[in-house]
Amino acid sequence: MIQLERSMEKKWIFQKNISSSKLIEVYVKVINETKDVDKEIIKSKLKKDNAYKGRSSQGSLSTMGVRFSQMCFYMFGYKSGNSVFVPSQTTINMINKTSVVNKNMLVNLFALQYPHPYSKTPDDFVIYAGRLMIKLLTEERINQKLYIDEMIWFLPFIKTINEKSYNELIESILEYRELNYFEKMKLFSSVDNYVEVFANCLHEINYYFITIFKGFDVLETISDAKHNDGKLFKFKHGKTETYRTDRICKNINNSGYIKLNDSLIEAAELLINNFSPFDKPTTMADKYVFSKEDWISDLYENELIKYLNTIFPDYNKQREIINAISTMTYMSKYSSVDGKDFEKALKPVFELFREILNVEIISGAGDTDLLCSIEDITIQSGLDNIYKINVDGKSRKSSTNLNPIRLVRHLKIHSSKYCIVVAPRFSRGTILDISNLPVVLITADSLARYCSKECFSSDDSFADYTSINEIIINNLGKDITPLVDKLTMNRYGINI
Image 1 (cartoon, helix red, strand yellow):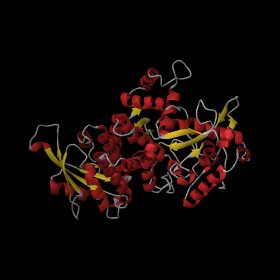
Image 2: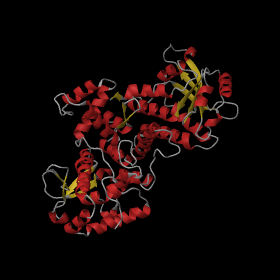
Image 3: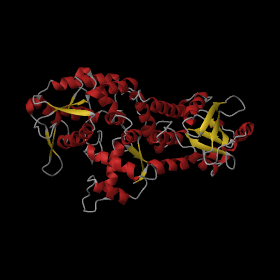
Image 4: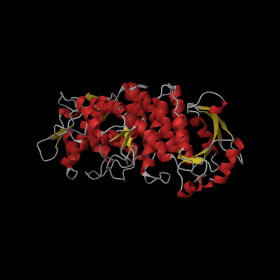
C-alpha cells in the first residue's frame, strides 16, 4: 500500500466556516448588490437575509472576514492588496446566470491546488488537489467513486502526484477496499494521535468540503449500508463530547461514497484530458511569478479562464473572449525572444474595447507593433472624434529592449496620441525612462483582469475604453497598472 506521512502538521487544510451552499449563494448575491460599501452595510444585508449570525447580537466583522477567506479558498474570488474582494469569473457567471451553476462550481473544484494562497497547508505539498479528485471520480478502476473513509485515509496526505504514484494510489485504494472494518481501524490507530488527525480530516472533508460541493450539485452522496458491514468510524473532536463520523447522510446511520453528478462527467473528462493532475501547480517559487499578487492573479484569472474555455464550447462569444485574454497573458510570459507571438496576441484583446474601430498589426523594424483607431464617444460625431494610438508589446524575454526615443518616433509616424506598452512587468528603470513622455505602461495581467471583468459583465460583451483613455491622458509618462487595477476593483470588487 502507498506509503504516506500522516499527521496534523502534514496534511491538506480545507477552509471551514460555512458548510451551506445556500449561505454561500447569499454571500455571492450580496457581493453583487453591495459593491464598494462599508463593511457594516454588508453585514446588515447578510443578517437581513439570515446569512450571517455572529456570536453577539450585533455580529462580528472578523467572522465575516473569515467567511470571505473561505470563499477565496473555494475560488469564488480573491482579496487584493488593499482588502478588496474581487469575484472570480466563475462567480460572475453564476451571478449573471450566463452558464450552468454546477459547471462553474466544477471549475472551482478543479482549480483547487496546494500551495494555496488561502490555506495554511505546508509548502512542501505541491499538487493539483482538485484535478486529482476529479480524475479519481472519473476513474473506471475504482468505479468512479470514493468512500469517505478512504478519502480521509489517503487524500489529505498526498504531497505530490505523478503517473506512477497515481497508479500506486489506485492499487492501494482497491487493496484498502478488500479490508474489513476492524482491519481498517487497525490502520487508522497505527497513526500517532490518530483520533485528532482523523477527526480533523472528517470535519473538514465530510462536514464542509463534500457538503458545499453537494449543495452546488457537483457531488452526489450515496449511502451504502453494506460498506464496512454498516459500521461507522467515529473519532472524538476536541475536548468536548463531540464525535466526527463518516456517516454520509444526516438521517441515515451508515457510511457511503461520493460521485460526480452524472451531468458533469463529460465536462470533467474534458478538463482532465486537457489539464493533467500530474502537472506541477504554479507557486510563489516559480521564476515567472514576480509577487504574491501575480500568483493570485494567475490562479484566479488566467487558470480559471482556461478551464472555462474548455467546458463551455457552445458559448462562442465568451469562448472568443476567454481565448483572447488567456492567450495574451500566456504569451506575455512565454513568447519567443522577438516577442512576435505576444504582439499578435494583443490584437484580439484590444478589439474587445467598445470604442476601438480598427486594430492593425504594423510591427517590423522601425515601427510600432499595433496601430489602433479609436472613437472618442465623449464628443459629437465627426472626424475630430477619431484618434489613433500605438501599442507595443514586450514579452518577458524582450522587455529589456524598450527604447523610449524609438517609441516617440513611432508616434510621429502615425500622428498617434500616445503609446501603451504592455508587458508582464516593468523595472524601476523602465518606469523612469518614460517619465514626461506620451507613453504609459500596463502589465498584461492588469489589462486581462480589466477586460475580463468588463466583457463578462456588459450586455454587449465589450469593454469600456473611455475610462482607460481618461486615466492615460491624466498620467502620461507613468505606469498606469495600479490605476487600472483600482478602476477594476472599484467596479467589480467590494471593500472587506
